[in-house]
Length: 477
Image (cartoon, rainbow, N blue to C red; front, top):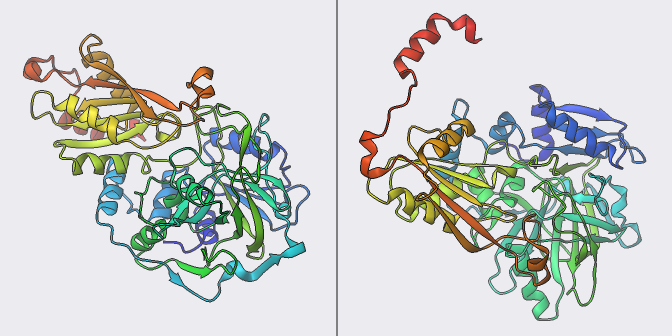
């Protein structure tokens, strides 16, 4: 596994998974190049010589967007099918034992230290990614560190960061996120919330920061467990928070109560593929120090297409924790879990071996209760039989239109938490800050009480398919 971002980039370059782009303009050109390259299946880009910025001040995009890069970043073995990757990550997370970070005196992030009049976040290229964005976003692949003032544990989250001026950054966090809860505890006491923001960190920390790690579990401890060794951190002299020693760019600062300072933030073209949340006053962070490596590399994971986000090639961040939660709740017979749709969040598919009457309905309603996320996550919950590959949209759709009876197999449940970036939340609901959504559960399994009489599929047997594939192998290469 990789202890810093640039080691992963070097490996991706060596195996031909990195495209270098020089001389692009931060103003829309970088974002459009990024979007087009994703469409051409070459998503991982390293931008250098950005117009108006110092050579060597670089931006890398979409490091989890390919299966190869994702497996390298998370230490996942080769040769696993897509669903088996989800199973592997689920099993890894279930065996979690905390490995706390190791405090060290210094590290690469301290190669350059800017304080006082030297502070200027505009030294680093911050793109305007989309035409209707309300500003420049330095933070789309962030690791933002806060400490709970009551319980004392550390959270690392991925939240979007807009540049307001040389010393002020936006700090948008969707309702219900751990970072939002922590900062509100400080504000309730009239205090500013201490914050460390990283804009280029080791891959595993980036991944953990964007996953739904349970409340009370530090992402630092989780990353240390997966790596098998502690994350090295440096205690910030200003905030007392840990700064990842191998981070590319980090800032220390404080987020004052919104009544003291909040500024217009957004709109931003989010992972939902829309500008759903608009622009409004949001909290800020006042920068007190900047630390960075020489020739720093900023990590970006911008939304890149209607219906796409550029985060994970496989839904380890949504499918794995849901699969684990279902099994821990006592659900039997689960053969696979996948999440399709925008950013692998919207359509949950659970493949099961039916064992009793009502089994599929029970798993569907349980999944609707357990899936976590924002912006429409888990809007549709589909349960299919074990002969359906949950990762294959064609097979899932076949199960829906051939096994799901709209009269008896579909239920609508209201009142689940979403967020302001959900495009289907109406203006009327937004006006009263009602960010709840409805979920649809669909039983696309063969009816249990006459399952054995259900018409058989006209698919060739696995044995016959193998015989023909071996004999006519030249046709399938």
